[in-house]
Amino acid sequence: MTELISDKILVDTGAKDPAFSAVYPMLETDMPLWNPTSWTQGHPYALYEQMRSQAPVMWSQMRGEASSYWSVSKYDDIKNVEQQTNLFSSERGGMNMAVPARKDWKPEILIRASMDNLISMDEPKHMHMRIQQKDFFIPAYVAKLRENVSQKVDSLLDDLEAKGPVLDFVDVFSNQLPLYTLCEMLGVDEEDRQQVVHWMHYLEMAGQFLTNPFRTFLSEPMFPFRFKRVVEDMFAYGAKVMADRRINPREDLLTIIAHSQLDNEDLPQEYLDGSWLLIIFAGNDTTRNSLSGTIKLMTEFPEQRAMVLSDPSLIPAMSDEALRMVSPVKHMRRTATEDTELNGQRIAKDEKVVMWYGAANRDPDIFPNPDNFDLTRDNVSKHLAFGYGVHKCLGQRVAQMQLRVSYEKLFERFPNIEYTGKITYAPNTLVHAISKLEVNLYGQGKTKPIQVSVK
Ligand code: HEM
Image (cartoon, rainbow, N blue to C red; front, side, top):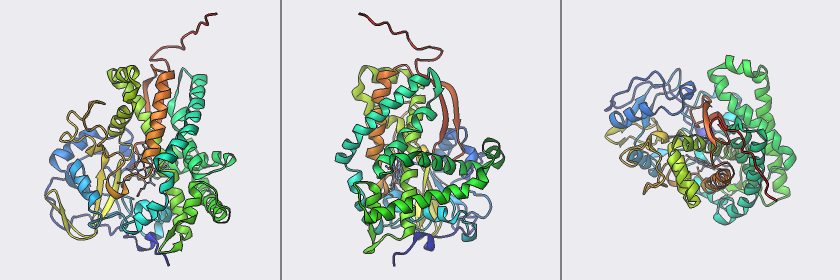
C-alpha cells in the first residue's frame, strides 16, 4: 500500500536550542518570521540584509510547542540546500514551518492534504509523480491555454475600465485571472467556479483567523462556524470530480491526477485531496501577488515602465525582474536527514531548514544594487522566485504566460496605470499576500481621457 507522508511526518519536538552551537548571531527582531502578523508591512528587507551579512544560517526561535529552525538567506546557500535532496528532505517535515502534534490537526483533512502531495515528496517518488502531470505544463499546452487566458484578460480589462478610474486592482484583476486559468487547466465546470472562489477566500482567511481572531470576527462574524464546513465541501467536491474522472476521463488535469499512480497503485484518496489542494493553492495566490506587486513596482520605477512602453519585447525581462523583487513565495522548508554543514554552520539530523527566497533574491553578491528594479540585468531570469532544483515550480510556464499576457494587454490599454499608495498585506508567512492595491488606471489624480471620434 502507498505510504502516506502525513503518517510518517516528523512532528515538532519543541526543541528550542540547536544540537550544535550556533556559529552566527541570533539577530534580535521584534518581528519574528514565523509570526504571520510580522508580514503585514511586506518583506522585512532590513532584517534580510542583516541576516545575509551577519547570520546567513541563523538559528531562529519559534513560539510554543514548535521547534526552532535554521533560517537560510544567501542565494548560493539556498541553491545548495535545494540541490542536496538526499540531505535536505521535503518529506520528513513537509513545507509547513511547524508540524503540530496530531491531536491538534484541525481540520484534519486540511492538515493531511498539506502534506500528502507532490511538493512534500522526496525522490524517486516525487519525480515519478511529477512526470505524470507533465502534459499540462509543456510549452504546447501552455500555448493553447494562452488563447483563453488572452480573452479572459480582455474581459477583465473591460471590467477595470467600467469600475475605474480608481479601484482595487486585486479585487477586479489579480483575484480573478489565476483562478480562471487554474479552473481551465483542472477542468472545473463553469457553473462550479464561483464556489472555488468562495473556498479560496475562506482558506486564505484561516491565516488571519489564527493570528487575529478578533479582526476576522469583525469582518466575517460567522467565520469560525463556517470554516470547517467550507473545508469539507472543498475536499468533497475534488473527491467527487476525480472519482467521476476515473470513470469518465476528460482532457484535463484532474483526469491526469485521478489516473496517476504511485507504487503501481492508483493514488489513495489522501493524495488526491493533497493534489487538489496543492494545485489550487500553488497556482493562485502566487500569480495573483506577482500581478499586483508588479503594478506597484512599475509605479515606483517609472523609467523602467517607459522602457517597456517604448519596447514591449522587454516585457518578459520586466516580468522576471518583478518576480525577483516581489518574491511571491516567501519560504520553503526542508529537514536535515543527517548531521551536515551549511556555510560553516553544523546542522543536526531532524533540524528544520527554512529558505527565505525574498532574502536570496536581493543578495547583492548575485544581484548588484538589489533594491533597484533593473530589467537589463545580465542574470534577470536567475532569481529563485520559482525555487530551484527538482521541486522548481511545475507551473512556472503557466505563471509566466499569464503574467506576460496581462502586462502586454494592460500596458497597451492603460499605459499610465499607477498605484495610489494604498496597499494592504494579509498576515501570511508563506505568500507575499497583497490583499488590496488601489490604482488609478490613468495615473495619479487623472480621469479617463475624453475620446473624440473623427468622422
Ligand atoms: C508567479 C507564480 C508562481 C510562483 C512564484 C511559484 C513559486 C513556487 C515555488 C517557490 C515552489 C517551490 C519550489 C521549490 O521547492 O524549489 C513551487 C512549486 C510548485 N508550484 Fe509554483 N509558483 C507559481 C505559480 C504556479 C502555478 C500557476 C502553478 C500551477 C498551475 C504552480 C504549481 C506548482 C506545483 C505543482 C509545485 C510543486 C512542484 C514540485 O514539488 O515538484 N505554481 N512554486
